[in-house]
Length: 190
Image (cartoon, rainbow, N blue to C red; front, side, top):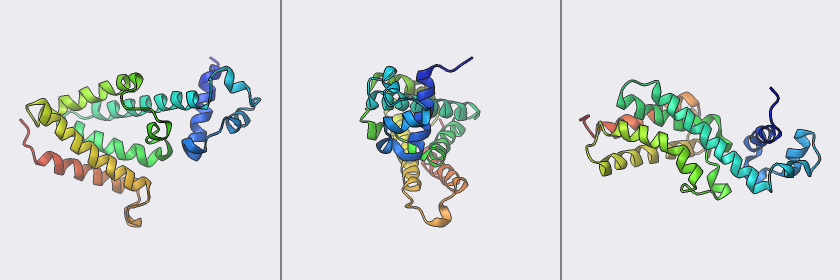
């Protein structure tokens, strides 16, 4: 079945954003790569911002599915939380340009579609965290610490701030496991 033009443009735009980042993305280059006139993408998107917002939602959806798949593969609450940490750094390492599309696009975490896409992941994480903390505030604290540590590691990797010998995906994945384990070891499972 042929792909609809809007999805095809999003696919090409995603490749382009992956190469040059959201700030380097232009509708003219998208048109050139799609083999279309410069005006053609505007039949499907009002402007560059609308297209980039659609991409941000697609990327968040992709990231959501990767988190859910990684956590579903783990049978224990500890395994699910560690899988989340590893998937965070893996996403940053393998999809660096699109790791956090919301900042340059000025989408906010409370954008309704973003909230909806992230709800499933949050519920899975809270369910796993409930095995380490009895009240919701302590569960959220645990998840904030885990997220901050792994997003920080992912950002250091993306920025090239880690020593050269630590610049492999396997090494940052192992570091994510150690970070998650250190945070979880502070709390005995309930």
